[in-house]
Image (cartoon, rainbow, N blue to C red):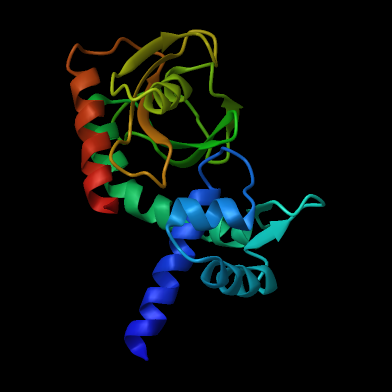
Length: 209
């Protein structure tokens, strides 16, 4: 019975991941084909997920993610912040700039964790909860690069705040997370800043994997 329950859970999670790929809804028949499961199995999974609000069906019968997933997503942000703060603190102290973790929410970037350096006379005040279009600023550009399979770090100046310089790199290797680690400052940045940001992003990815 335990093995059967684990298999059902695994299938349900696979179904949710499939619906989360951004390609729109599917019919039960399409889900059956893409998951290599029989239609009766898919219908049983959908019945449970519908009742819990994790999936919904539109007027044409296509299946989409349900709003019940939002409650889970909101619970993830405090966990991400707790995991990111030690890495961001080390980065902020090394570079002497405000360090941040930014995650994608649609076409926007949301700062979920921010750490300021302790030893600088002046630093950028960048608040948790700050939101900006992904196309503006190093943090958003790093996330857009991640979507294209690129792992570069990005340097921008004055795109979000006049006189502010930013460096950011994507957090790679986590299919469930679109995020970047970055720093922002009004002062000059050393040549080592980019590689240090890349290293911090890799450290966070390892901590979350």
